[in-house]
Length: 136
Image (cartoon, rainbow, N blue to C red; front, side, top):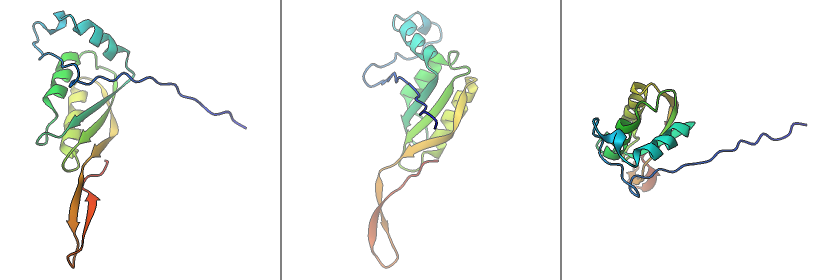
């Protein structure tokens, strides 16, 4: 009989609506007081989960700003993408994958997307609520 394998993990939640990241100025951002502590958090992460809404088939400005700040520190890291979208979020997922590859990082080959329910009218006039998006 085999004993169960336990995997221990900790989660470090970084939410930009609670503590916004200043806009990335390439000449000065590494000198900001908050940069060193946030850089340490990024460097110690084994996996980064990038979650963003779909803004007209683009990632959020806050996400782009985060990627601009730490592109060097992302090299060799693994990323997982989550997109909240009015559709399937495929364009935004592809954009996140491309952006992380440009940072010399790895991206999980699957994405997760969420969408709100929409009303679908069937033949014959009956309607039902269904999710308009599916994970990819």
